Every structure is written in structure tokens, then in C-alpha cells.
Image (cartoon, rainbow over all chains, first blue to last red; front, side, top):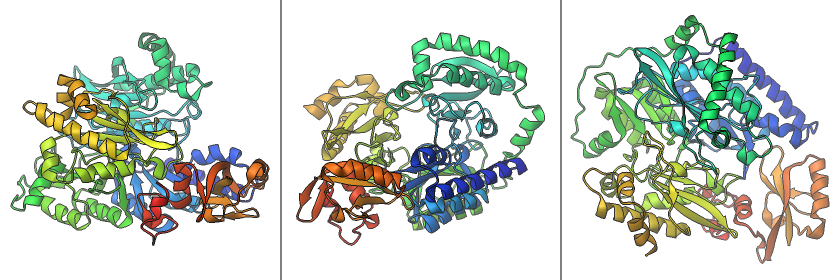
Length: 542
Length: 98
């Protein structure tokens, strides 16, 4: 893992001191809320329905046990004993007091963490593949590049006041586990004739105008990547709409001028930027890459004993192949049946930290699906890990099944939401609580947003649910056919919306149609794409 | 009736204007009638409350009930964590929201 150098630490410490002063002035009444709001947002502090909410950055979803324990400590000391892991691979605390915020950030800084650029119209936390460094199908480890982008984008003087927020994802595998093409910029690291570079996709996103990022460049050499991204941002910064926040994202700019024209402008800007010497020297790349060296693998290649049937189910569902023989990738579901997607208690966070330290070379990942990963677990230790997870109520074997639901906080917490998301997720998970039934349905990615901002990624759900406000009453629209993976697509609304119980019934009917029509190993998404909406609509609306 | 609400500057907690101060309990909220805007500006100017706004509510035997579900959730707490609401000992309290 990357470790702060003196510059990193000094910058974060200085920001804490600066924000402490700003908070003091605000509480003393020396600043209005209008003056203070942009300052607190730059430090990840929102005002939500019930309290302040603090969003803490977890760069590319990677952290160690010391940092994970600090997250538990913050939840225990300053919040209400739990945290909420988000679709941006971050964590949010829902009950923060303004007067505590500087102390929290100071404690986070002691373990190389902060909340900088987790809000505001800047480049947000770089997201990545949660299996980075462990996946058998990656061409390289994307984390050094994600770290390079983190350093480039942090406090970037030109890009601190963009027309709108800006999200970048980096992957290096053919399987897209980071919804890469639904980001403002998506990078897929590839090799071409032995040389490392990236396919560059620009202009994707969800929100009220979902778009799949078009490919702007099929191969940018690694040596040119930072300059190319600088050019991409500069063109956006120059021409992005600042007059209308609903049209200010880069996807709107590219949609309006066209990918070809955007590509031409980026190429022209790149020719200039490349003369400025932005790309880091090889020595700096090597310095960063060295932090992500493979761990000292030493476990024998033994298969775990499958005699315990519950353990065997968990193995099949939540444990994924590793590129190193003798090791496996463990997914910890934060989606207990009837629970709140992405929430974990302080005690559970501590348990996961302990397991990472003992069994996963001290490393964890947060996934955009609001789960946790132990990336380097020896197969011989899997049963012990599972037992510890089971004791902490963290062993739900439902990865990628219908109860592994992404849900935004919704109207229970969020000031922007129009409808509650969590109760719908809970009811659907409970309806499908029978694990045999879930496994029979197979991979089915269900995602729920409580408003059109789509923090719950409903556009990318095989089944998506969007909560809307219909004359003061919660109403839920269904979408089918979305995907955030390499077969990326945007879901389509299937018809009139439902009340809370109605949407649960509609989802169940859709699964019955799927079971009746599926062929071979088809997933729900495959069957929907093959047969179209009509049979589903007939069953649901009759 | 109309209520004035906002969030406490320090704690961020939801607060309701009582006529001469702020309370976290919606039962204490006063009908600000047509004078809410003046109170809002005065309180915001005094920097005692964040993001104040005026809402519609219905008077009931148990006190004011905000017209919109969003403000009823603000008044009580998250429906999915009754233990974190203002009435953690009353499992039926959530019915008031819906």
C-alpha cells in the first residue's frame, strides 16, 4: 500500500488546521453559512436530514487494518457506532457534530486519511477494481496508476473549481468490476505490442442523464497518460456549462459537441500540454509502484475442506479465484437479509480489520457494490476466516445475488432524496431470503436510488429501482436491462411506478418470468436482452 | 399551519421554532403563520440555525404533523433505525411518519 511521504502528511495536516480555524469562525458567528458551506464541502462535510454527514475518502477503496480500526474508532467515539460504505468506495458517517469535525479529521490524519475532495466540483476519489493486485485477469495492477492520479488530482490548482464534480475510474482487467464506463473518465489499462497504455473513455455517468462513456482514445501510452488526462480536463474546464448545473457534467458537453469534436480538441490541447513536462519521470513511477509490490506469498496450494455445508455455500458464492496459487479473494457481504446495505457496526469494522491483519497481508478493499474484500487470503485459512465472519454476522453468502443490493441512503438520511431506498431493499431481500431461491436466480444485480441523482446506480441495475415523489407520496419506477460491467448498458423504465409493496411484488413477478423463459446458463440480464420487455411487462402489469 | 425548521449549527440536529427559541421536538413547534419569513431571516442572521425553511403542517392532538414525509422523517429520525429516532422505546413511532 502507498504510504504518505512528508509532503502528503504536511498537506493533510495543514488542511486539518485550516478547517479547524474555519469551523471555529463559523461557530463563533464570524462566517455565514453561505460563506462556510463551500469550505465544509471541500472537506467532505455535508448537512443532511438529521445531522452533518462526513464522507471520508478511501483512495481506490484500499486501506489497511490500522486505517480500518480508525474508521471503527471514529464511528464509536463521534458517531452512533456504525459507518456506511458507499458506492464511491468511501465511508460516510451520518451523525457528526460540527464541533467534533476537526478532531475527527485530525485523528484520521494520523493514519494517512482525510475527507479532502469528497465533495465539491473537483476530481473526486479515484475508484478502481476491488480485486486489483489479486485478479487473475488483470494486465497490470491498476493501483499505482490510481495513486498517481490521486496525487495529480489532489489540490490540482486548475481543477478545484470545475463546472461540476468529476469522477475517474481505473481498471486493468477485461472484466469491469468498477463500472468504469459510467464515470466521467474511465481508464482501462491494456498492453499493446508489449507497451502499457490505456483505453480512455470520457463522458459517462449516471444521474438524471445517464450516458455510457464513448471511447475517446483507443491507446494512450503510459508515458503520456497524465498529459492526456490534463488535456481532457482542460477542454472540459474551458467549455463545460457553468450556467446550468444540470448540464454541467462532461457527458453533456461531449454529447452536445460530439465525441469526434471533443477528441479533436483534446488532441490539440494534448500537443500543447505534452510540452509542459507534466508526466512523471520513470523514477517517480517506480517509487509509487514499489508500494504495491506483491505480498510475500508462502501458502501451499491446498483446497479447503468443504464438509461444512454453510461454509461450502459461502466458498462458492463469495470467494473468487486469485492470481497466486494457494490464495483466494474473499468478499465480505454487507448485505444481511433485512439489513441496511453498506452499513457496518464499529465492532464489525474492527473484526474485518483484525481479519485483514491476520489473514490478508494487512489489506482490505471497499467495493462500489458496498461490500468489503480481503484480497490475499491463503486457502488454508478460509475456514477460519469464515468462522470469524459468521460470528460477527458478516458471512452472508449472497455476493451478486438478488439480495446483494446497492442502495443509496435515500430519504431516511439524504436531504436530496425523494423516496426511501433502504426499506425497499430490506423488503426485497426479505422476500427472497431463501438462499436456495436466490442461488437458483443466479447473478441478479438490483440497485436502488432514492432520487434521480442515482447514487444507488439504478441505471446500471439488471433491475433498477428509482424512488420518486408523486404528489408527496413515495413511488418507485422499475428499470430493466442495465449493467455496470463490461457489457455496460443503461436500464429502461418498464412502465408506471408502484408503491413500496407493489415494487417488491413486481420484482418477484419479473424473476418468475425469467425462470420460465431462461435458457441454459442465462442470467436475468441475458434473458431480458434476448426476449425483450414484453413478457415481463405482461406479467407485471397484466 | 406553518412551522419553521432548520438544523442546529453545532450538532446539525433538526430543530423547530417554538415561538421564543428552538426545540428538537416537533411537538413544541409553534405555528408561525404569515410571520415565518421574518423569524427565519432574524434567526439565520443571528447564526443560530442552519438552512432554515418554512413547511406546511397539520395540527393534531399529538401536536403538529408536517405535511411532507421528508419533514416527518426529519422530525422523528430514520425509519430504518428506530433505535436512533427521538422515540427509540416506541416501536410504533414510525407509523406516525407513514
